[in-house]
Image 1 (cartoon, rainbow, N blue to C red):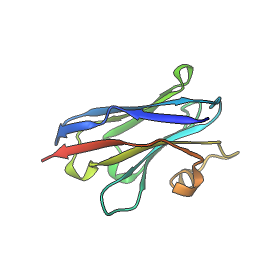
Image 2: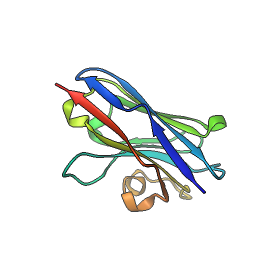
Image 3: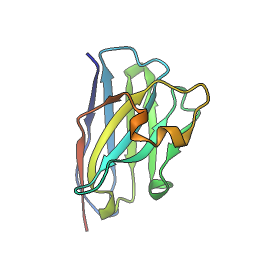
Amino acid sequence: QVQLVESGGGLVQAGGSLRLSCAASGRTFSGYVMGWFRQAPGREREFVAAITWSASNTYYTDSVKGRFTISRDNAKNTVYLQMNSLKPGDAAVYYCAATPPLLTNSGTYYSREGSWRYWGQGTQVTVSS
């Protein structure tokens, strides 16, 4: 049974920081691409960031570039999302996801919700203004 468990969400003031973690278990995720999506109330789930197995490729949605950093520790089967300079617009439930890699990695492909095979249950991030 595959499990992706997110943690690290919470309440933070605008301008503050949070680090989300996602621990994967239940199977080997060797080679898998890991990513983060988010969903705010009344909105569709949107892509935030993704990272390939070797971390040689990272992808971000434009609105978080320069503020968020995705990283991973393969020995721990864990992916992280460091979020700095948070804005009220970043408030959402953040979901971790995992998927097998493409032969040729594509940021466009990984930005699509339907491209991902496994999902976590989400962690809430609230940003107060």
